[in-house]
Image (cartoon, rainbow, N blue to C red):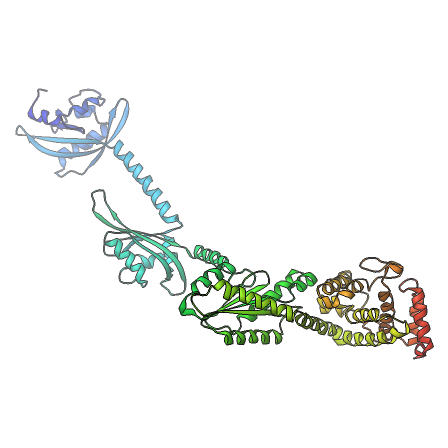
Length: 586
């Protein structure tokens, strides 16, 4: 073929271009066809196309009229089949009908399609399974696509949101403003509460809406990413609460107090009143009954301080057993009224706990801006509080002791109180007959009065069980001498009897508890008390035994001399009873 203007034109084509006559004879072809493998005459189209495909092309050339549909034609190159997409057209060349067949290699195109398909698949996988809610919004504010997470966060079904107008139908004004900002070309942000479209759920959301543009800068719409941050907000609120509150009582803590005191230390809050309190009996509760009982006392005091508090009042736990109340615009008379009300609430308390709530309170007032709150508030209230505690400490202890004694007397349906009263009469009877000194007699009375003090910490259902006790109940009751000892050690008025309370269940033969003392290592007042206690118990009804007459009770005591009781003291005690004719009382 000699070069022609058409041949020159074909020089610039990358596609495989053939110009042929109706018989398939090639009139012109692009230089790119030189890379193809041909079989037979290289100037005939059949050298490049498989037979069936050649027949298809020639059939179209002979029978069909333009425009021709695209064709998938395989060519051969280096022994490999080259897939192409072919376009065919009809033209006149030198007054004769000719056809143009342009074949484009689709291998690279298909590779791009595969890459695009895989990219789209990855995108949809991320889109559909993202833990974040994702939404596409067009330039009119209409939702065009969304994932399931977005529908769940919005509180409705995915189908209901497709076509949803975010501008007209979104109720939350601040979230709607974020969408409008993004439609205007700037990122829109919203973080706050959101109520679901159905109105059944309120949660905290973080939403970001950003405009989407093409590489050429064409606006394509908005993409929104929404996250439900309710759990995170709740955790943050919990952390903030713990940072500012006491975990036991729920009151504001010392850190918060320091901040609030500085905030209130301004002229508009004057006079500023501070009431400081120190809990009475906390050490007793902790030492005698364990820290859980101490915690009950602290929480009870906290509730009492909060009860009937004014709207401007703030209650703080200042330290271990110290509390503070801040009262803005409150003078000394208001402080005294508040303190009196707290004492009245403590006195009327009927809640749980083994130690009656009691607190020593002092107050300070800042009247002028130039006064230093550390002096007129903190130091003054603390000094007054400790002055009250020193003056009323014994009174507070005695109130606690009276409450414990009252609780003790209610043991066994009130029988314990009757038992204690009879023991005190026996104590007054035996004192002069044993020539007890005044101090020994007082100590013996304390032992008679409070020997079973530890039972106040024992569950009532165990106290009411008849003998013999099951092992668990036995050990629960066996602990009461130790509990009573700790209680007595915590109350100065009972301190002389503390060791006696601890050992009142010891036995002469060493088989008692809790220390296993024996014979004269058991204190004398305890050995004498054991005789009085045994006589009263034996001669009065018990859940597990009927009462005995005095002669039978005395015989029982004599039978246990040398094992339970001091034999010499038992003989002397029996002789006194017989001398006065008491042993003969039926």
